[in-house]
Length: 55
Image (tube, rainbow, N blue to C red; front, side, top):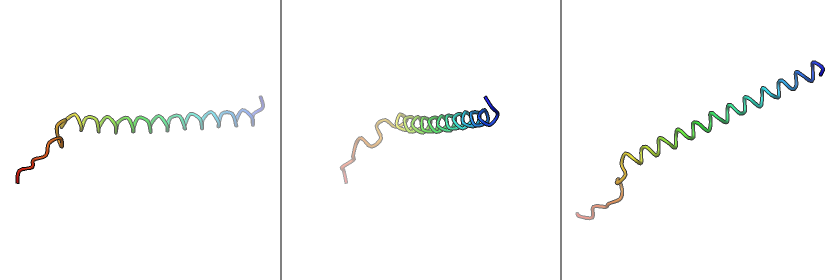
């Protein structure tokens, strides 16, 4: 394999790795947001289920 082809292959592999890392970080951020929202719902499970109709 000649040097230019090897260089292109290395850059493509590096780009693919960087994309994988960025996607993994995004997935982790989304999972963290979902977990935070779930914990918020668990803290107040009955909040908003009853309406006080007395004036």
